[in-house]
Image (cartoon, rainbow, N blue to C red; front, side, top):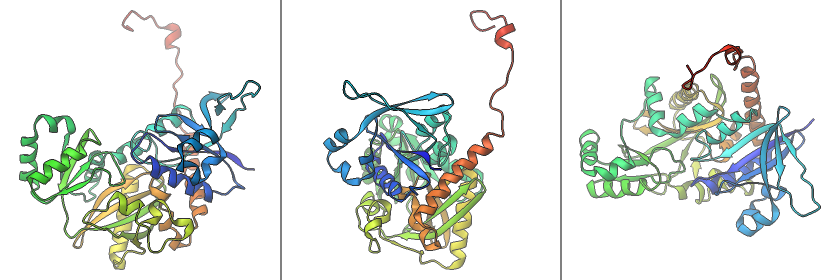
Length: 392
């Protein structure tokens, strides 16, 4: 019997449009016999909307279409279930609530992928797909992620980190620190964004200042690391729960410049795309499998599994690696990758519909395991305790 699957997407992020593309792709490929698909669109203003039209990418081409074809909704916890309540429209129309049995977040970037929406699901006590709050937050923050990798002896590039506020207050000392510890050329990154937003390369002091000024408009924390030249990026996805996981084939994205840009990822129009795969990360020009030997492929796949386990991931993620000659560095992780990286599992004979089933089952498995633990401790402290004004 089919259950109600809420697909949550959009969000207050610079990657809002990318999330729409990823979500529409997924909703079109989910098994309609297994799931009653309930789209929940999170607008850039934080509103939540639902409606069948949200499964069609054409709905988003005109903002007026979204408002006219959707209904605002709110969520409440009732009788042990998450209930979606539509806003009443018209004098004689009654509200018809819908129970959401399982949540599938397909969001990218800050205020959603970073643990925010996972916190909402945890508060509402509903099982959901993908990484939990901690792994999502740690994966989004590139500085924290590097620290976790280093503590697990997983190779990452050294970096200099600082806040945007400190940058405004003391540019000279930060530049001097970067020049002393790293030198040129360098890569400048916002610490908590994806899709290559705000990332730039600097080969001298003037360029460094300009790139940091730009990155500082996107995030409160920044990092600068050594630029690898020539740059080769190899990506590998992993699906599973914690240490029970399976890596995908590896890919090598084709870059139009020295850095894989937002345009490369989403506007390039890949050579091997089909009509059903012509959007989102699936449109990126790429070589699959990556043109690396079997030994290097296995090294990267093994590292990908170690990253997945070290972060405590669930569902599907994509780990991006950098090759410096024969040396492999972990660059970053995407805990909800664009297009859910389905294109990296298709060469293994795993169809997108099957991958989506697997992601949902991973979330259910995590929920079953959590139900084996106690999250409350019954005491009579409030009944028998005597408390003063300060709780003493």
